[in-house]
Length: 259
Image: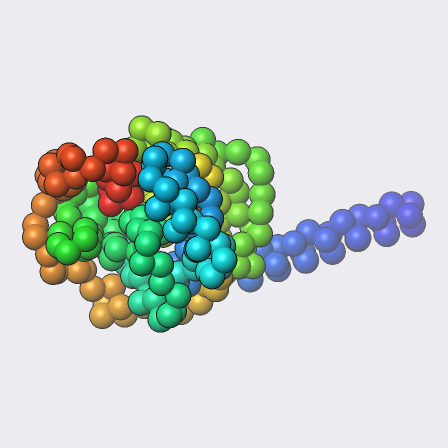
């Protein structure tokens, strides 16, 4: 009888401790996330080189490998408050430039305001020398949630997979400890904040480095306003028309600008 009382007391203690921890778990609904976008330049350049018959591209590739780092890293922030997010690129201060190779997928040209409640977004997109202000509904992504877990920026995240733009395979990691269905760039639609995205076949990733749980003011969530007003359909048609004579490069550039 004494042993049974000890076991029961221990069970009650565990329940109380678990309840205490549950009461103290904080689910962040406001804050700022710093992301790093990493592009494997060696792999991206090699893929472009293999599509080209130009010997110049081979020379540019070899010169880049000798003088530049394999990964190009860019930073951005995602401010979020309840059902609104603002994704903002941070200007690249690096002096490392490659004047022989240009792929828009390796840059950061989008500032994106998303209203998750209404399912609408406003994006300022820089497409070469022109700026567009895109207003449309958020992309509907058919996510397949898996059992795989990974810790990112101190948060346990669950993996989900999807295909967007007909051919781009996406791996995302989200946390339900931040109950905001947002993410970097235009990646949304999971039951929690997306802290990691990988495009394995494009050799590009976005991963959160820090998450700051803090109040976010309306001034930190200002919708972009500059650019030629378009929707997704008009933007696609405009880019297709401008790049119609660019061969294989046109499809690669189109995917990057529509991401």
